[in-house]
Structures are given as structure tokens and as C-alpha cells.
Image: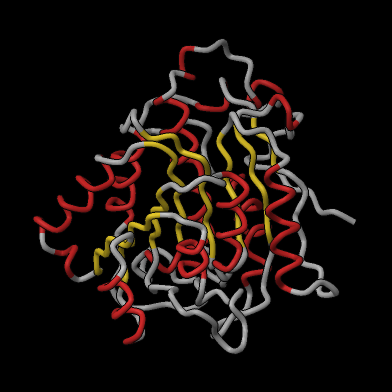
Length: 307
């Protein structure tokens, strides 16, 4: 039976009418360190009821104006080979309405290429925020490992902007140096103000179809301690918000989708709160930039009683 969740305890709108679609994908096939990514989507959505409706950076309550639908979980099916399962995910996402904000909620990072194919079948740009390069051709016998999504994205024809990277294999670095479609911003380099400005300028220069993939281990572990493969260093909360500000201010970008992956729920629940607040910021910034704050107050928040 499909499991259905809600965001901020709001009712799920009909898919055809929703401004925002959230797809929980509790995939956990190839984790190589801390288990638990299968529990992440439910944990992130459950803790969303601790958020406020008001989003302080844009100064509005987005869901007075927006309709949201959290789709039933797209569950793993262990009877399917990895290639078949990922193709099924692509087919499912391809069939969804396209004129909305799509957020895939993982689950492990191996799911990203399937989502990108479903939302951005033509070559575009993937902004890839991660502690790891994820450029293995295969890992532990699988090209569908969470260590391989960038290899698959390149095979799909996309350009990659990598930010926050601070753990990679020698062969991955060699490939990055050879591959003109990859722009790399190592984590420590981004501590230099000039390099940080270069990352933001690169994002600001984007045109056409863009997809944003956020591995929660891109954050400093102080911000998101519950991740599958934590690394010291990483983005602060406000650095990621600055990346979002830059991306959503770019009128030449056609944002096709977002995913948030690799969270592992833990006792403090700090990582879950970071992820659900990140979802709120992404939804608010996207909608405000499109003028949704000027629409009538007929959104999901208006359908519930609250104090």
C-alpha cells in the first residue's frame, strides 16, 4: 500500500492543480556507510509541522497563495533490477505535470539521474551540491550506486556545476580535469571570497534548463549531522541560502526540478529540520520570483484551521 504524507499538515491538492509537487522516494539500495536514507522522506515531512507558515526572507506566507501536493511514496521494489527500477521512476516523473515546482525527496543520491531524465530530458545544467564527487563509473558492482550519479548525468549530456566537494577519488579528479562540462568548486577553495563570488557568478550566468541536486552532506555537519557519509567542512546555512537567492533571481533559468537526498534521521532531528526548512525556502523563493505573492489567497494554508 502506498504511504502518503503531508507538508505542514496541509491537505494534498489534486496533482493537476498543484503549484508544487513533492515526491518522497525512500530508496536505500547502495548506502556504503550509515544506513537510514529510506527513513528520510517520512522524517523530513513529519517534522515540517514544526515550521511556521510565514517565510521571513521573502516576507510572506507562501501557502496562502500556493497549492501543494505530496505524492504517495515511490517505494523501492527489490524484485526489480536497479536499471528497471530507475527507469520506472523516470517514467513516473515524466508523466507528472511539468508547469510546477518539482521536489524529489530522497533517499540516496543514485535517484537523481532518473529524476533529471524525467524533468529535463534535453541537455541542461545540473547544480550538484555535495561533499563527494560521485563520479565513479561503478561502485561495489553497480553503476546505479550513490557514488555514480554524476557519471550517469554526463552520459545524459548535461553540464555539471559541482560545489562543496571535499572528498573524491584520484580517478575522479583526473576526469574532472579532462571533462570540459564539469565546473568544480572545491569546498576549501570556497572559503576564499573570490572563489565564492565565482561560484555565484557562474550560477548567475546560467541560461535554459537547470536542475538543482542537494546532498545534505554538502552542509557542515553542525548544520546537518544526520547524513549517510559525513565529512568535515561544508556549507553554512546562509551560504546555501545565498546560492538559492542567486539561482532564483536568474530570470534566464528554466528550473526543471530539485532534489534533497542522503539524509539519515538521527536523535537530535537537526538534519531533518534543516532539510524541511530548506524545502520551505526553495518553495518560497521560487514562487515569490514568479509573482505568486500577488495571486489570490486560495492556497493550501487557507484550507485548514490553525493558530
